[in-house]
Image: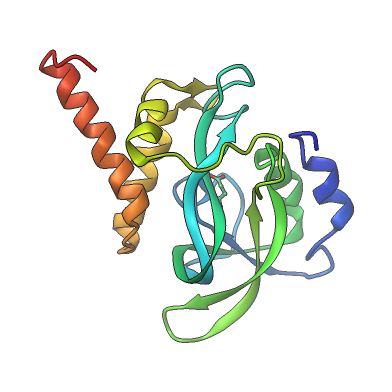
Length: 196
Ligand code: SIN
């Protein structure tokens, strides 16, 4: 499967007949909303967990030296907190392009803080996509992120901005925070001349 999922997403037409819909963001879509939206809320999805297991060829790395970004992995009992945006289908062209490196539109059930729920759309890069990197120890992921960079900037900025945005949402994410701690420890080691 090619890494460019734009055409697949366009052909699926998921949610395109709705006049408005909820988009669930769990990665850069939390801290970088470069699209029009009507409302933003904290939301969560059940049965999915956030993992730095997806390669990035176009934003935080290159095809030759991919960065690592998040995707959602199915995990019974898990809860993933993120940001839900009420959008109109006009923003699909922008979102499909932005998420083209392996992410497919999927339908999920969102839960809101007031106890209500709604069907929504999420972009997920599943293990079958060509840019998928898969699991690695969190310390190794941090070392990888420390050196990768792409057209959207250093990979470390993605990690640090996501961790900050999750704290602002009051979301606990042991995987993201462990990788952040590892990265900051690498920085501290470098500052003190500790060999990597
Ligand atoms: C998302 O943020 O919901 C998808 C992954 C990303 O763009 O970082």
